[in-house]
Length: 327
Image (cartoon, rainbow, N blue to C red):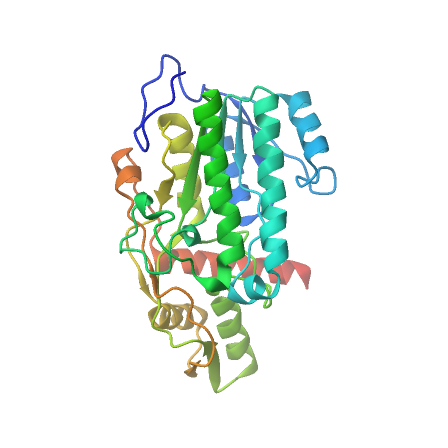
């Protein structure tokens, strides 16, 4: 296979992903991985998984041996150490080193095992803090990163370079995609490590339950964010595995954003909280805006299907069911 030009979808003499392919989903219990498993299964593919207790993806030797043993047709690398501003600021070493170890183990192991297709999932935080809006894939490495998640972002950038290197040196049909902020069933609602949307759902729910007259949130509420339901993300992943074989990472988003203040209002309405919302401007805002340019993904035929308010309501219902089951 001849290495392709950056960002250009390539024609192939054989299907990029055959029907009924055997696909290893790394990180299958997480928000992204669980959604990918559902989508691939619905599409008729055979999904292979391993629990963390049986396979530590940071272990290069064990990961390589596992991939040589099962020899999947494709790999979706959705495993990662993730978290919000507080977690990234508190544990930068782990966010850097754990993700580097996972990526190196899985990608190198897949290549050694002869895996034909691999999709590496990164994050929109790879782009510079002051990137043009909406952010094109070409903005990568064009300016300084947001300091609060620099370690995680650098690990994901290294993954993109790793994928490009395998393509250019070995002709590997490996690709990478950069999702926007994700949410949905399987999300992390832990108050110390969750991202903004599940954190808001939990805060407003608990405030309504406890009769709190006000909820105090971090920052000014002015940063703008884009949110994509994880089931839409999973549909995009399958589309890319089937249709894309380019050098450039592909942005995955919905092409719409809103302020955190507006998001808080929607979450308050969904959860039924009627108290006041106060903003602690002494806490960091993070990147002012992160809206992805999804022109490349759209050209491949992708359209998100789940509206934000409906998706938040579904996610809230899922969390309540889980909480009731644990009670």
